[in-house]
Image (tube, rainbow, N blue to C red; front, side, top):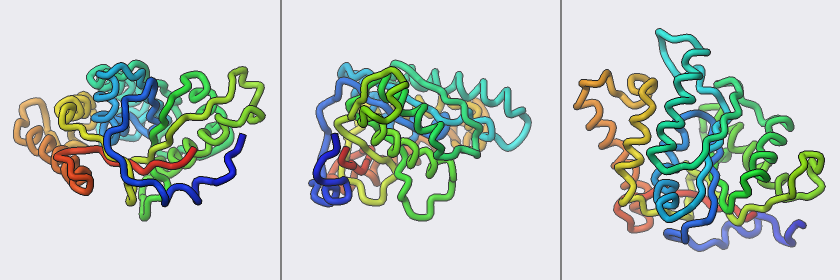
Length: 253
């Protein structure tokens, strides 16, 4: 059932909030392997330690995430394994891979239906995804994933939307967007910052291209990367008076 007020009328009235109680279940819908670890792993690791059943949904196969020396098929297999390892480090219970081709994700009705099915199956209290409205967002997969996830949250709550999927409608309590230019929810990740960094380091295929680490013996590269992630968390926490945080924009559901 639709509420009388839509999200456009409610979002601006939300007061900034810190550290919600750990939900019973949480789902992050992201474009690529490693996106969950960059944007939500600190929060999900904290919630998982408190008993939250956490799920990552990865929409693409990550097959384009290298510069040289690999095939797309092999890289997709490697990145799937890396994401599972990273999820284990953060205490995330399950990872759902949709295996759409990296770089060519589209917010189609077929993708929306697939996400609706996943949301209804796992029934998360909170869904977290890319902010598709962020200005000057370059990567098309991030835009398309964010829009698809938001659209799927709306469809998942409607009992007459795809009733043939065979599952009851589900309305998450919260929808959070990461990388937002106007965050209003902040989670303290001081206790899980090291887990976040460790989860990111599990993505070894991305060391050179994304993390700036040349090889196993590149101690300076690892330290520099850890410093960048720490400073990123400090910037996100500064607005809320937190030492280190992950920041989100909450939308009404």
